[in-house]
Amino acid sequence: MPALFGDATPSKFYFGDNAPSKLYFGDNLIWTAFTPFTEVFDTAGTHSFIVPDGASSLDIVLIGGGGGGAASSSQNGRGGGAGAWAGTTLVVGTDIQVDDTITIVVGDGGSQGTGSGGSGSAGGSTTASAPSMATLTALGGTGGSGQTASPSPGGSPDNYTYNGETYVGGAGGSASSGSSGQPGTAPGGGGGGGGFVTFSARNGGAGARGQAWVRAY
Image 1 (cartoon, rainbow, N blue to C red):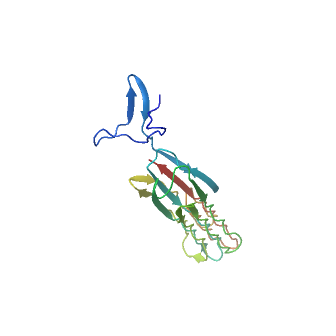
Image 2 (cartoon, rainbow, N blue to C red):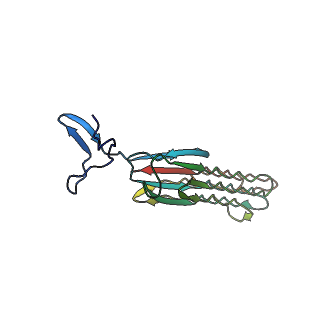
Image 3 (spheres, helix red, strand yellow):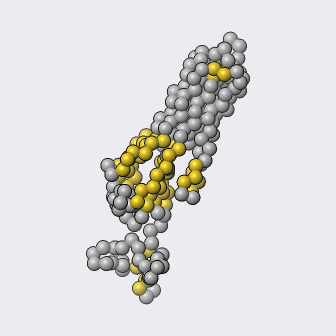
């Protein structure tokens, strides 16, 4: 037996100033409050999130893909940059409506630099968009370019705290003399630079993909 107000099922009830989490009719459970959840988008490419009925707000957190590391030449290649973070909160019913579709595009990691001194490419940006909201963008990390005297690891995005929740970033790929740069770890780690070795170039490491989280509560 659902708890109805006319033909509608309310998302909240109040007894004075108190909001209960459950309602019973005798021994029968007739209504429960909305259970918060977080959906994670951890594959590069395009995804959809449909705004659920009962949620009052959405937190959207994004990180861009990490940049690829440069190959070595006469010195070590530079590591790629870490993906950037971005976050926003949408109020359901004001900023966005129930059943609206939010399009999430998760940026891929940048490709590694190859050959003698080849640059890594930039990581792809991660975005969230809908007709009723401004596009939220987390930029991809810069590609590693040029040479450096010391082995240059990829950039690490660290962790990101938003509205009391911690979102975990990846780590930059390592770099060492005489070895190819290691790939960054997801999400958002930059690839390490290629390590210098006499008469032979070493490739950079690939950047890691980005990621998106949507927390409904």
